[in-house]
Length: 445
Image (cartoon, rainbow, N blue to C red; front, side):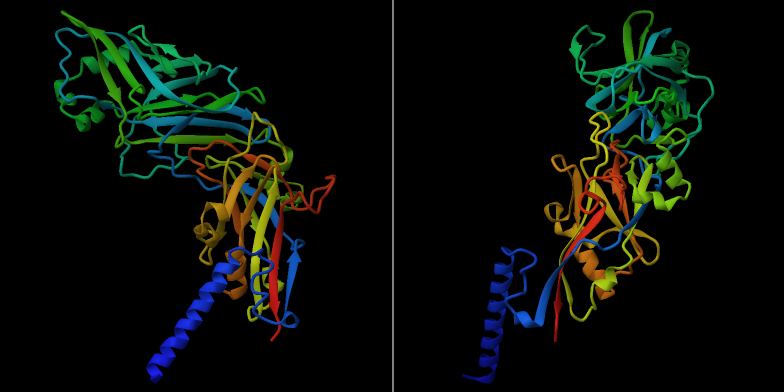
C-alpha cells in the first residue's frame, strides 16, 4: 500500500469513527456525552443550579411598528402594568384613479370599517371611547416608524366615537347581508363633502390624492377602571377594512371607497402609563434593582423588558478543560390570571461588546432546542443557553448580560410577571424561581 493510500485510509477510518460517535451522542443524556472517550478518573460531570442570577425590570426600547401583518388598537387598564393605549396612523388610497362622482355629488354618510381578526387582550365588556383626526403630515412607505412616535394631526376631530369591541359578533353590512365581525365608526359628512367637491386633479392617482388627504389618526381615550378595557387585532389589508363615502348625485346613489394596501404607509402608536402600576414594578423602573429578587416583568409594545446578569459564568471552570453539556435559564410566572395571560413566546437577547443587541447563539439551533415557549402546565418558560455559556467561558462572547423580551412585541399584546431571583415567602425558593440549571464536564489532563 502506498503512503498516500495508507494516509487516505487512516483519515477515512477516523472520519467514520467520529460520525459514529456523533450519532450515538444524539441519543444520550447531556450529562453522559463524552464520558466514554476518556477514563472516568480524568473527567467529572457536575450539576449546578445555584449560579447567582441578578435581574430587574427597565423601560424597553421603542419597536418598529410600521406595515405589520395585523395592527393592535384599543385601550386597557392592566392591574399590574397600568394603562396601555394602542392607536393607529394610516394613509388611505383610492381603489381606482379618476373616479367620476357625477353631477352635484352630496355625501349621505362616511363610515370607517375595520376588520377584526378575532384576537384580543383584556375583557370585552368595557365601551371604548376615542376620536378620529385627519393627519397634518406626510407619512411614507419607505420610512421607518416606531411605536413611541407621535403623529401630527389637525385639531378638529372627524369623529368622536364609542363602541364595545365584539371581535366574534357578525354584523349587518350596508347591503343587509350578514358579514364577518368588524368595527363600524361613523365619520363627518362635512369632511366627506370636502373630498367629493375637491378639484379633479386631486384624483389623478394616489400620490395626488395623498396631497388632498394625508391619512387618518385613530386615537383611543385611556380606560380609567382597573382591570377593564381591551386591545384587539384588526387586519387593514382585508378588503372589509375600508373607509366608504356613501353619496348621491343628480342621477344615482353610489359610494367612493378608500382602503389600505400592502404598500400603503401605516403604523401603530403605543403609549404606556405606569403611574398606577404595581408599586414594585414602579420602584424597579425608578432604579430599585434589588426588588428584582421578588418579581420580574416583561411587556411588549415598547413597554418593559427584564435585564439579566450572570456574572460568575467564567467561574464554572477554565476554558482549557470545561465543556458545557447543557445550560438552561428557567423562570416561573407569578400570576396565572387568564384575562391577562402570558405571551406564547419570549426571546433572550444578548448584549454585545459594542452595546448592540442580538439573539443568543442558541437561537440558531431551532425552536425545539432553544425553546422560550410558555409551558401551560408548569407555568414556566425555559431557554437553553448552552452555546451562550460555553462561548462566554471560551472568551468568544463578552459577558455583558442578557435581556428578556416578548417575541413579536409589535403585534403581540400579552405580558408576564415572574417570580424574582430569590423570592420571599415562596414554598420552594430553590426550584420555582428565575434560575439556571447547568450540566458541565471538567476534564483533568
